[in-house]
Image (cartoon, rainbow, N blue to C red; front, side, top):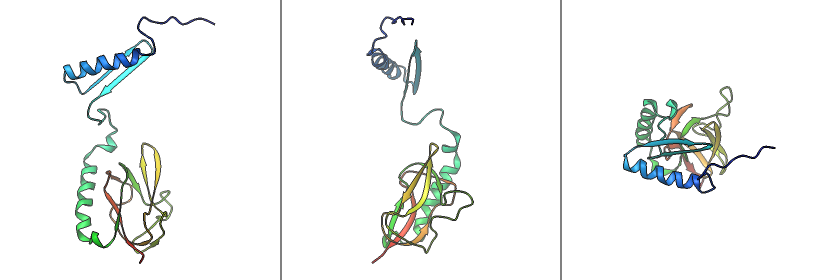
Length: 161
């Protein structure tokens, strides 16, 4: 079994020290992203939290259009009379478990607390969104297979009294 030679400065703290130096360089040169590979160590730093190479499905105009529709839709329904279920993450809203399946819920349906209302796909993971309350679904604000933003209203539920 061959021994691997350690490069000078390639100790356990080397990636952290490299990241610190690159962070200073990032600030000094006013860069938004830097990606460096030294031997087997790769360090990538990025400002702002928005990936430069973000998938185009998450960034284009349909997201903005969807948000605008959601912003105007709640005005049509009195939000004070019910509980709004909001998107806990950014992703794609699906009303059913598959394209051929019936929706989990529709307007007018009675739901129990903890019942699955929809799925939000985020980064190829399917996240089931459950009802916070028992009651009747008054309004579904988002169309199937449309993108949603964090905090965007998905459903309005009139709680059972």
